[in-house]
Structure formats: structure tokens, C-alpha cells
Length: 452
Image: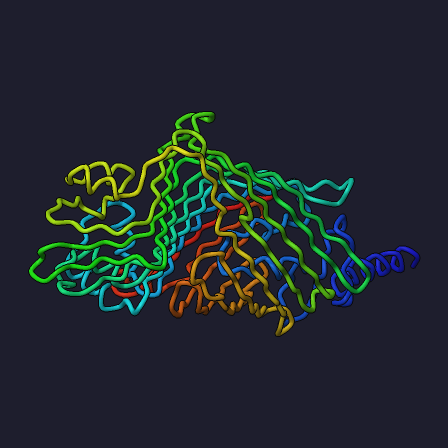
């Protein structure tokens, strides 16, 4: 009889571990396992409910080490291009120097309102995380290749570059407030993250520091009173300009053969109420890069008239463009002066805040958030994301967002977990991905992860 009682006792203790109160969240060395066992609810690790709160996967702190493991390796690819008017295929052709057809050019021209805005972002690399039981926190080490392109300006600047100034005969083309930035660089990162339990509330904290190895940079800006006037019959053109142009040549062929160096930081802070809700704040890419090895600069402001001039193809604008203009020395003296001064640029950092709420016994998680990127004319990007747990190891997500440099975007994500492997694939702009020649922007991201 004693044996029977002992068996019943251990069965009751074992089963109670799977029917504990949903408000109880043990400490991390017990894996914070809030597990619900009902016929309608998935069996989830409490923190895993919030692994899918960002609209894409570029957040280093978005995924956690699995319960029962101490290590995690993520291999990521994240790409998006957002615009209020530039179709995705037009952006592809510009980036890869492909031929741009007249049909695509005309379609883009019709879509542009008063201003054109375009941003492109790519981040791909590998991240390793290790959990230390001694201080109940994670060490994060990673490498990523990064590329960013940002462009904004008046519609008449687009028309002048891609159609020439013939359509402005007897008129003035506005070339003011053009902003163009191009960055590509290697990012080497190290940081920590930690979860803390305060009875009814929990807090997440993470910080990441990065060393940036610059490969290339171009930065072009025009002032508020920059315009091009074309006289009737093309007798002459008059240019009033206020221009700043900085560039750094191709570098990073070797580790110490860089165009420049920089540093950036990421910050993560989140609060949870026993898995009933979560409020998270993230700051990414807050930093700068300095270019001191063979930089090229052009700057100046002036008024000049051209009577007979040969202008090269402006779509292949480079640091040598001013040097190749076929004009006499008197006119060339009125163009921007060339220097080789070092310069620094701030990165277009991103700030994000997200509120998450599990519903339907944790089968559904609603996320509502806002993003801001430090770019000229950038509007706050608002989004909503729904995560549905088909099984405890399979999640599908739908997103909808608008703002920033983009129009209305619809997205979809699929995530699947196995014992040692995780897979995530998705897009925040399905329409642009499906019909890139007709809808502005596109997006695609992929993550393969292993926990052990």
C-alpha cells in the first residue's frame, strides 16, 4: 500500500508541474517556464510568446535561448526597400546598374508626387549567444555585413536626371533639399542580455556594442536654393547651387585596409506582467563612422551660366564627375572646390516601441508598435502584427503597416521549431515582393537558428 501511495504522490507532483498557475514565472535557471496544459492552448515557454514581436528579424534581442539549452546560433538575412513611389524593380536596377526601361521609368514618374523617398536596408550575418547560469545572463557575439541607401528629393530632380532638362525649357527645375546617403560596412558586435524577475513583474535588458569597418560611403546634400534654369531653345542653362558631397573610396579589401572606422550601440529594454503583456523598447544603430583614408569632398555655393557644355551620364555620378565636365577654366572655377578632408557621418538610427498581448489562451499574440528612423522627411511607421500558434512549435504571423518612406504594407511570416533547429521566413511587403514592377518597396527575411 505504501508503494501505491508513493506512486500516486509522484504522479501528482509530476502533473502539477504542467498545471501550474499561469501567473507563476520561475527564475531563468528554471527556464521561466510558464506552461499551460488545456485542450485548447499550446504548451509554450512564456518568453517564447514574445519572440515574434518585431516586423522583421533585424532585432538582435528578439529571440531567446531555448529552455534546457545554453547556446544559440542565428544565421540571418534581412532585406527591405521602402518608398512612397519607386517600384522595387527600379531600385534593383539602380543598385545593380541594370538597364532601366522607358516603361518602368515612366511608371515611376507617374507615381511620384511632390517628393520622392526611397530607403534600402540589408543585414546578413551570424550571431552566437551563450547563457551563463552564474549571473543568469547571456553573452552575445556577432558579425554582420550591412548596407543602407537613403534618398529623398523633389520630383523635378528625378525628371532632370532621367529625362534631361528638355522638358524644363523656359522653366526652372527644383533641385533643392536632395539627400542621398550610401553606406556599406562590416559590423563586429559584442553585448549582454539579462532577464530579471520581480515577483509580479519581469524586466529584460540588453546592450550591444559594435565596431564598424567601413567599406564605402557617399553622402550628397543640396541646399534650399538649388535650381536649374533652361533658356528657351536651349540657348543656355543657369545653375544656382548649394552642394555638399563627401565620398570615401572602396576599402576593406583587408581588415586594416579600410575606408574608415566607426562604432554603434543597440539598447533593449522591456517589461512584462507575468506573461499577460509586454512593453518593449529598442534603439538600434546609434553611432557614427569617420572617414580619414583618401576621402574626396566637393562643396560650395554659386550661380553659373553654361553656354555650351557636355554633361556626362548623371546616373553614374561619382567623385570624378566634376573633373570630367568639358567646360573652360573660367566656368570650372565656379564649380564646387575639391578637397581631401576627413569627415564623419551619423548612422540613421532606428527606435522602436512595441506592446504585446497574448489572447485565446496564448494561441494568439497581438503586437502593436511604432518605428522611427532618423532620416530626412521620415514619418513614424506604425504596424500591427498577429502571431498565431498553430502548434507549440509552429507560428504564422500577419503584419500590416504604413508610414516611414512607404505606402501601406502587408506582410506574412512562418516560423517552425524542432528540437535543435529553428526556421523563420517572411516578408513585410508581400505586394512589392509579388509585383515589384508596379508596387513600391519590397522585403524578404530568413533566419536559421540552432540551440544546443
